[in-house]
Length: 206
Image (cartoon, rainbow, N blue to C red):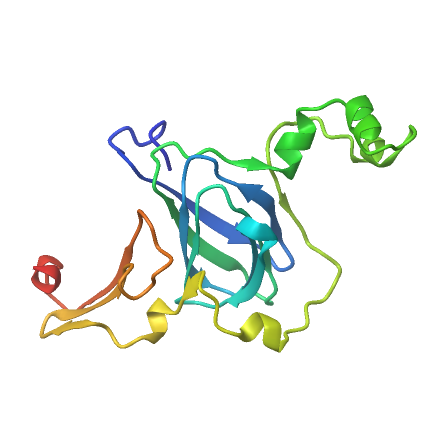
């Protein structure tokens, strides 16, 4: 969802991402937007490559937010047995997306082989990229085994669905995913609102 198919948008875009079992959203980055995602269903593993060669790898479960600053490489893999589904929002009405397939697909096989010192026919000849579009890969044959490394708290994720809602009224509740509670956020925020029958959202936030 961007300004092309929803023209009223200004300063925001969104994606509904579905990954089948073993599916991977390949490494990519957004040069003009930060990314905030909310896990609806499934279990996934995310890796973010930050500045100073830092790498953060962690699991994502339903109810958790993840935030990726603008320009950071990241990927996501479904490590569960069911579909993993995410709502992803960007602080741009037309977010740009650059990834491995799109980048490699825009170069000739000859240039890529020369760049990596490979004699033809080589690795890139086998890939046979014919598109500059990025892709979702899957399924992967390798099994994922959880470890303490992936389970430890990470500054890029926040368990919005697991906290006690900061706002509680007779009409419902609101859990706030803002920079006050999720410090890494910049330019984006998310509220998880639960409304009781016949309640109105403005009663919670006003």
